[in-house]
Amino acid sequence: MADVPRKSGASRATDRPGDVSPFALGLLLRRAHWRAAAVMTEALRPLGIELRHFAVLIVLADRGPTMQRDLADAAGSDKAGIMRVVDDLERLGLAVRKAVPGDRRVRAVEITPRGVELFDAAHVQAVPVAERLIADLDAGETAQLTDLLTRLAYPEDA
Figure 1: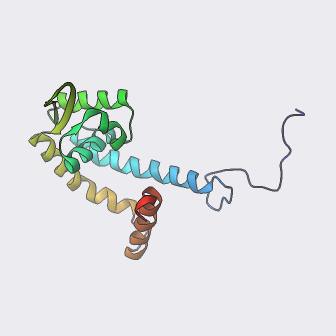
Figure 2 (figure 1 turned 90 degrees about the horizontal axis):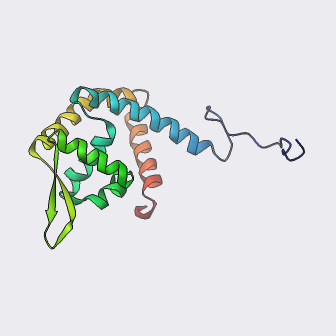
Figure 3 (figure 1 turned 180 degrees about the vertical axis):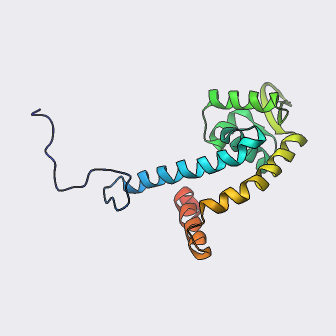
């Protein structure tokens, strides 16, 4: 036990309210993410898709046809994960892979009309559960939280 450092006056990292450790913000963001993901999962469940599927549909609805290799980064996944998600979306009729002119090896993924319908339905399903997520915040706090998280997530745009 000689190699184990003695406890200093510094706080140990927790994810409890009031934690002042250097990890506190990250741990708090992780807990908030878990709660938000649970809320989104609840909204998507009746539609037969998971949050990982919706993340790809968001990219496709926003960008249009997107090369499969670019989807991983845009949706916050890895290459193998994106392959499985796109396979699922194709099987559900929500997206299709199409050849990219000039390069037979590359495929672009495109949202289908059925995918757009489901994407729109997901937004309708999400309204009441999203409102529950922020029920303890007033409008000003919600706007402030959105602004702060946007600045944290996109520092290059700040």
